[in-house]
Amino acid sequence: MSYQPSFLAALPPGTSPRYFIVRLGSIGYPIIIFYKALAAIPAILPHLVTPYRVLILTDSNVRVLYGESLAHALRAAAFHCRLLEVPAGESSKTLGQLPFVYDTLAAWGGSRDVLILALGGGVVGDLAGFVAATWLRGVPLVMVPTTLEAAIDAAVGGKNALNHPAGKNLIGTFHQPAAVIVDPECFASLPDRDLRAGLAESVKHAVIRDPAFFAWQEASVEAILARSPAAMPELLERNCRIKAHYVEADERETTGVRTALNFGHTIGHAIEAQLSLVSGGVQTLRHGECVALGMIAANEIAVRHLGLARAEADRIRVLLERLGLPTRAPGGLTVDAVCRRMFFDKKRGSVGGRFVLCPRIGEARLIDDVPEHLVRSAVAGVLEPSS
Image 1: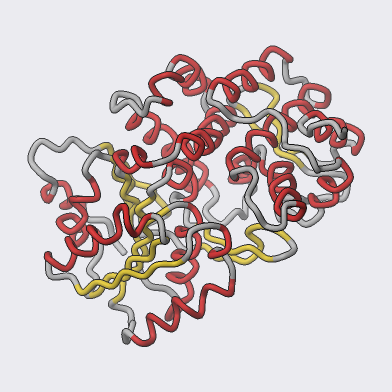
Image 2 (image 1 turned 30 degrees about the horizontal axis):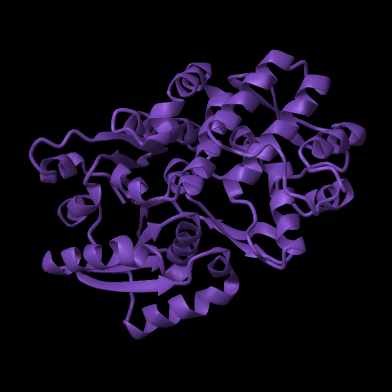
């Protein structure tokens, strides 16, 4: 699906969007960032795709905040539109949720004239992306993220995945969107904790790729946490450009370049999965909070195994703390249990231990055969001691 820059002419007068194109060979798609973008979707959508019908997939929280009004606006603009709600939370990111969506599409007579519009956070984006990739072997997808974490990470890059009892994100596809539309105004409704969790991915992007962006975040903590209009578009664009860099270089994770984006996730995913097990499925830490813990642990390995300066590791930890992210997981976890979980993580490679580690802020490397004792020590450092 070709990109048409004519969408700029459809924007309200005085609108100054930030946008760029994710280029994948001969095709590409825009990432568009501006305040009031949700209200402009009916005007700009025809310039991005040519759908006859739009299925908005959202969750029970976002439907009330933005879903009903967007569906009404699309219908008023002569789109055939349906609004489909799934329960909020990780329980919707499973194979068990798919029949409900597929049955709705089938009953609607959904054919290739259907566009899937993902309105929500990472769970909605993953589910919508999987549906768009598999319904009739692929229909257009537009991502409209309403959480910071989704906007700067999950919505960009075409990866979607569902969870399996053996681990997170084990069942998935690659299906690039036709566009990503980000309205920073959506983040005004985010609980503080969810905003902070999303910022873990922002720190990750800076650590693996951009020292200047890391320094900007250090200098902008107060403005970021206040969701300042002077800071949020800059934060969003710089993150999306970093993510796009890796997607353009390694769209389907065949060259290893995109693996850098897994920094903090191997240990983070293991902590997240084990916490879910011991809490009976209750989400005690957000995904981004677990990634923060994973980054801290990875940095401890890098200090001892790759020469990361202690001062740089401390800078990363301090920034995470200033952003309100945890530096220790809650009680109830053991080193043995977390390390066992890593065997089920799709990001794990060799038996000896494969990790994305950073020898300095701004550079990431994939390191094989990390000694087990270093891994165990690093994991222990982010777990609350047993009483």
